[in-house]
Image (cartoon, rainbow, N blue to C red; front, side):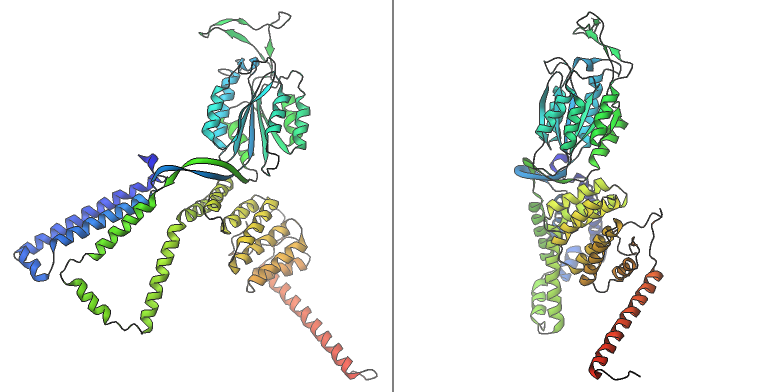
Length: 554
């Protein structure tokens, strides 16, 4: 049942509607008992002009309208449609070793089982990222191209096992090169390779492949499976019983060891990290490293998605509530209302104001319904941002961008999250995008102010001054921008984000100089005094030119 609704939790409000309907029914019965004490109920109702059947219809329509409103709020979804899915994320290729050495049991139950369990958790954590899978042994094969479909990636992952690649050996370098060839050439997304293997390689030059990845701007994160001490490779029958041990060409028992040195060198060469083992803590840390990077827009292609049908329920709810309002309990109610309506002096100022307010309220309601999902995503992002969960907050803001492509607020809030994490380049890029979309002068002023503060943090004083001046042009009353301009002109390098804007975190006290309000006011007065002196000098020169040469200036 809950699969038919995008927000099934909102259906709990039906309990409140049911409680209200029960309370209303109890009140109606109490009123009838009170009328029975006065006299014959039908006679009393006739004298009062009340029609009992109308009262029942009103109650039924009110309960039905509220029920339909709750159902519409839960966003019922019937049927599907083809839609282009645009999300934010990175491109991640997962390379998994399927060679015979992965059957070693120095990790319980064995290396391959541990690798598949780790990969399942990793794919689930990489929300919003495109994931691809490369399986390799003596050669590397593309198992799953980059996709946003997590279920499809898991399905391919289930087919990966020891012996899936018929070519014996372990070609770690070929796996990296296969993944590099499958990354989109023109994409601006961050690219990563996650390599799960025991590290034993048979002549494929894995460190050289890592150097190629570095030149392509791809970071490699390696996960070593096994132990440096090594483990023999057991050969088992179909029932799982040990039949013997794997032998090499010389007849000696094969011992498979974890090559941590090679895996660490590969990760270090590309700016990635090496992890040992595949437990939950390691996978969570790895997913955090990959997902914490800046994200670009990703066109995920055409997918079949469920279609919202809340509009029909909302329309029926409006009709039901209008019907409840139109039904009068007393006879002659609406004729009396019509007579009063015709007697209204429509030329009076208050009637015009009331009509204008009613129109504005209707427009605001329509706009509110249209942007409900946008506001929900923005509010969720703001709450996550306050909790310090910046990556999750960005994903909500990205959703808001899709729901309202022309809105500047999502880009502005994304820029703030980058600024909180000291990713100034990404913050400036998003501020620029927000400035292009912003229409309100106050919002453009705040964007310019934050851009100036970001430039000041990176030591770009000239750019910071220009940004603060732009903030003043959009909002001449912005005293904070004035303070920071004078602060930078005085030779100080770090501006203080003034209270009340909420665009940047306060200084953390690690030696950065901040500007107090009193200091800024003193600097502002000094600047004003200098400007006055310059005006006096210019005025004196003009008077001297008017007097001409030879005169004394007493």
